[in-house]
Length: 521
Image 1 (cartoon, one colour):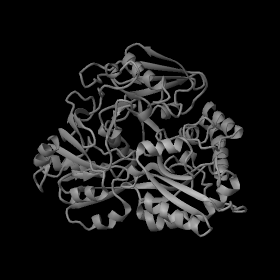
Image 2 (cartoon, helix red, strand yellow; image 1 turned 135 degrees about the vertical axis):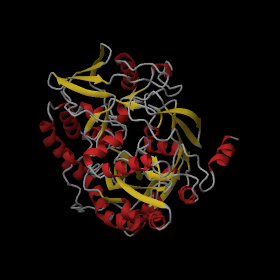
Image 3 (tube, one colour; image 1 turned 180 degrees about the vertical axis):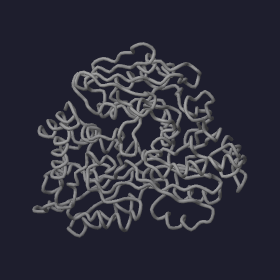
Image 4 (cartoon, helix red, strand yellow; image 1 turned 45 degrees about the horizontal axis):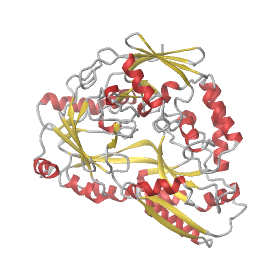
């Protein structure tokens, strides 16, 4: 019934309400009660202490600045004044503390161990949040960025940490959530930063890739924007549709061939080297990914250029081919309408077949997929990962550490020692050679094979004068403008477009506020 009412309101060319922005995405942005944030970060309903700029360096968000003491063991974040939750409760250090402790106290919400070394968290006065760490962490401002420190009102928390709703501080608040269908947001009048142009935003969950494209061309949505929302094979068609604007941005997401290192045929390092040598990643990117990615030369996104060394250059030594056996390639069903994973799996199946391997492709719904991954009932799997903190520990502690949540039998004492050294170095300069070693070891051990770094396309109709998406695939909801209206509105749109050409300026607009000049004091 809700769907029918909204469909009547929003369907048809030119019939979309002037104050409403409708975005088609390929998944449900309702993450639910057992998640860190209830709603996906792209909804702009909640905010965190810091965000990452286009070079994946921490910049201010709810924290206007921060100080570092005791050789990076103590971090003092100074919260912004005059920030209010959606119920008009003022943001205080104590409320932020309660929210972050909810994350820090549960492996469910902190799977990469961002707060593993947190000793105490102190609310000092009204607006100072003080983290005391057991060991140094020179990149802690990165570690608490975005999803690692969402600040929600503690009244949303159940005793077990589950969420009843989302009461954040963002420019939009949740008006209605229809599971599997749509998220309806309203602009928050009490927002502390730049006020959005649109008073209502609707995210429609259009799981089928063709349906998303058709809805855009029929102007049932204003935009299609999310990582993987437009498939590579749709790009050329959408380029030539009158009244559509097609754009792209390199995002912090990399796509991986996950290898089960705990069972044949890829238990031995030499066998994984052989596997990497026969999988033609250049051919995959050229033929199947087209302009939507570039071949991975590093374990994670090159946007984190300080930590990238280019060791995955394809110079593997295939000295030992494993005995041909049955190989199971596991795919997550929900990813197939967002990336060309089935095509890639079939390409790998064909490549292995040339050497006598009988590879079978198994498509599973989310619950079954993660169950089989956890139980090790796969040989190979395809999945994405986004470097949410912009620094290496987030990746290595997750995939490479012996106790990592996505470590599939390739952990070792040497790797664990390097991960610990990198995490606990006192300065970034000390970290650099450690992460260089880890990157080199990763390229030799190959616990998983990075295939390509994602370049995400998004598209919008000419009803909009400005629309964009950032490196964390967040649509720029605050800056989005309609093309119609007064001359002043058009001038604002042109100003945003010109500012968007400058890397220094686009950082400001991606986050949605004017960052302070000197965040670290």
